[in-house]
Amino acid sequence: MSRKDGIILFSLGLIIWAIGTLVYRIVGSYFFESSTVGYWINVTVTGILYSAIGMGLLKWRRIESEYWLHGAMCLALPGMLGEVAVLSTFSELMVNMQPETAGRYGAFLFGGYSCLIGCAWFMSRKASSQHVISN
Image (cartoon, rainbow, N blue to C red):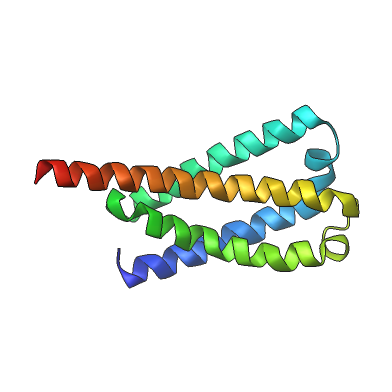
């Protein structure tokens, strides 16, 4: 993976995080404070979407799958770091949600980033093991 790819993926990760944070700032109470079933549907769908979008971006950049874990980290790190600031000032920034919702929101984020990184790790390991077997 080239340095340029890393910078592009990091920038896209920052943009995706900013848009997602803005969306949840506006309509987050609907997703996090309505029902337990709704919350888990949101966690599941977002994890799948984030993984699919991440893998799509890695394919778009033509990054070899053995380097997908590196690419996923470039996508995830801006959001993970940004959420430190959001969660530490949750009640001031996420004004449409109750302060008690910060835990659910944090768990949701952890799940989404874990799906992306886990999927990329799995694909990287698979590619690496196939590379070893073919040699």
